[in-house]
Image (cartoon, rainbow, N blue to C red; front, top):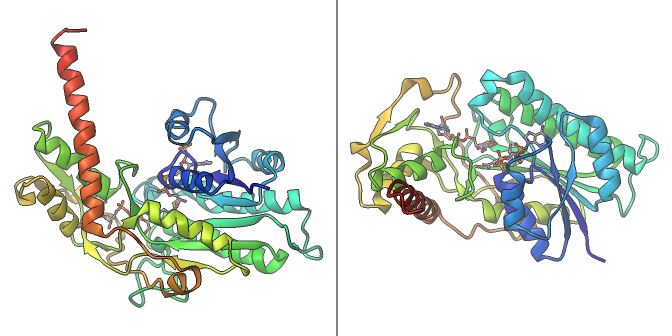
Length: 343
Ligand code: NAP
Ligand code: GDD
């Protein structure tokens, strides 16, 4: 019988790639969507037409119990979050409600629907749970590269909220015997990445500048270093973690690092431009407490899951720039047609 998966965060970058991946493996997939007319829902439906939807919100315990009860999933992937780190200083309480307490609510929904108590522990056939943990939890790193044992020192309300979800998932594993795991994923990007994140902000600007539609790109800290990979590769690791015999947390990243300055240079080179002619450093975009360096030690994921990334960083930036060039070109042509009055 086909496995049933419930994905929160279905309308986000990872939700769409994971849905496509699970559907390609023969899963029946439900995406949790919130709001009465979520504008992102149609976008993901276009990508994965066999996808079903169920209403719910990580802020609303009852809605999660109803969603889990209705779908009766074999696997729950909790990808829903407010994921933009910079925003977490402005709305720390909301970020905590969604990213931290939201995890607890989903764990509780699974516990209630499965009838688990401290003395009635989960057995075979239980619902398996994946939590989207983040390398942002390592924050002010104490060692490099970072692995599953590295001490957590989050530097943002977002990082703190993710540390709570991470530890609570472990606690439900230990308290109720739940098959709950966290994937500690390092930054991963794609043409579907939100425009607020630095790689997509860069690829969008490069396309606009190349087409003469924009002049400059304003950025914050160019010295920050990240381990960037392709989102399509990372969702494979999520499923593999739930397919193991034992629930074990895994770090997922490429082990290769680049600075924001490298990212800008590579992206502008894709269209034959010099980044220094266009980039302006804006101190207002520098964060109150920066994470300077993240680099993954994914030895466990490679050994246990057989996971490997398939795309390197320059290829990823090229993919994103080309996609945004096509999009910007279409939009410009459309605008020209409209202004020529030929419609
Ligand atoms: P994303 O594109 O920002 O998507 C976030 C998703 O969360 C959206 O579908 C959004 O739905 C949903 N969401 C927000 N508030 C919600 C709520 N109250 N209830 C239910 N859903 C809600 O993020 P992503 O890049 O796909 O990342 C997926 C997950 O992995 C996140 O938890 C993120 O923190 C984590 N993560 C990401 C990375 C990365 O580099 N991408 C690395 C490590 C960890 P709406 O359409 O309703 O807003
Ligand atoms: N967004 C943004 N915009 N970042 C900038 C800018 C800018 O104009 N200028 C410099 N940066 C720097 C940030 O200060 C940060 O050091 C780095 O670029 C990456 O920023 P983001 O792309 O916003 O990602 P992030 O590392 O803060 O967080 C992402 O990765 C985490 C995993 O490590 C998000 O996807 C998180 O949800 C995820 O958990």
